[in-house]
Length: 267
Ligand SMILES: [Zn+2]
Image (spheres, protein in one colour):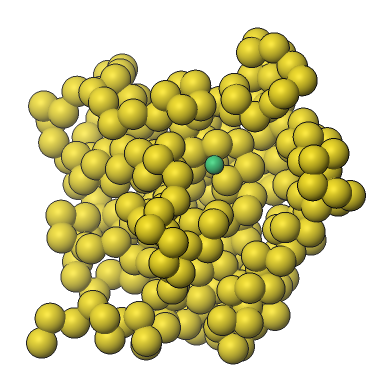
């Protein structure tokens, strides 16, 4: 098993809000971290033209990635054009085959936003097809059969598209990563100024803190937390594979939410 973890999120700043704390905790344990936003952030402005905002958001994401010492991967499409299609599938598959992660973090099928759901579907299917020689990639790439465990992040809305709260299956302690997580988000300056004007001073960073506190309170154990739901392992990894617990559990930095686990049992 490689000590490589890859976040495949949708828009620039989605990793910072929902995944960066956990990525940083893995990094602390010696893991190599890869960072990919599928969409380029083209619609995240009321101020700049298309090419300007795309350039700005690429630079911001690269800065955030460099702040954390993660490996950057280019975006592959426009905002609101994240569709589950062969072109994007081939591109995501090529990236995953190049990186060969043993853990993938991505959005969940329950997410409130269609772009996020589609980004998650692309990541999941690409991981599933990592070893299928006839799967179409965007460039020549080497298939591999090693296990991948997929985890889904909590939605930005904290609830699913039908308004129901999403409850994590695993809580991760992100307290020690909060300062870097905030610094990463602060790199997304175009979003900060846009949202601060419309929603009040420093709302952007405060929102990130509030989310950490929300899941921290829900965990009843940590001050700041990120939540995760482990994907069905069939076709991806052994049934009991749970590297998030293997890596972060022994130091008390992650635990399984038994309330959630109860809902997954067939018997
Ligand atoms: Zn997003």
